Image (tube, rainbow, N blue to C red; front, side, top):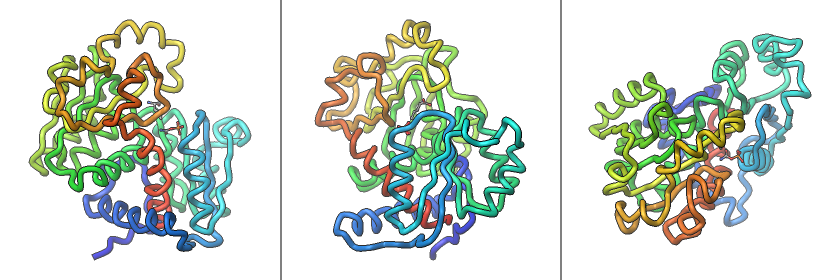
Length: 310
Ligand code: CP
Ligand code: NVA
């Protein structure tokens, strides 16, 4: 039975039920097929999506803007600097005003609380396009991409090597929700937030899967079906890049490290990749790599999300 998601915000993956996650994937498959065969699917004709960005973006911006257009609606891009938001107007007043014009809002920002407040004070669905804490659209896309490649999610082992950041947090929530084993290997001081690990442990217990947090990348990679990495310094942490490079050097995904994984492991990266830092060209461009399929699928998955919640 279909779950009604109309009006629902997507703030973090843990707010979604397993049924909702698979409903997004089912609609994604349909919409991807329609897009590829040129069949119109204007499910959001006349609707408008506001897109607020206070950090740069290639994939998120272009996939949301293209996606809403393909669904028959219109996307409007706002750089946060162009808005009164958080300068001369509160998040709550902004939320109420935007709700009078738009049918949905997608926001990429620093403080996760701003996304929570935008949803709390407004009356339209809010989609998190990345905060310092979470990147749910990315990880829903990653799970959909794995499902396309492996036809199942449950029982697979995903190993994330690197910074315990927004992507790692959403992977913890996402993998544990769908019953995948997940191992995070990060240097001391850069492990994922404890509360998110604890929430994911609850999911994993329910689904019968495993979560491991370690500082040992070699041990972590053993038996991996999927190896995932992300930049060592995220947007907003540029000043720490040199210091982080020293601490993360053992965490590079390269041909030596991947020898410990299964032969047919899948390599994933949310992109942008800092080639030569967290991953080598050899791995990025190998036959195991699905990084550009992931990027493409952002479009299809987000179209499904928009169609369901708007
Ligand atoms: N992966 C991702 O969100 O990319 P952008 O920063 O280019 O949007
Ligand atoms: N962790 C990265 C992800 C970019 C898509 C960042 O926040 O910059």
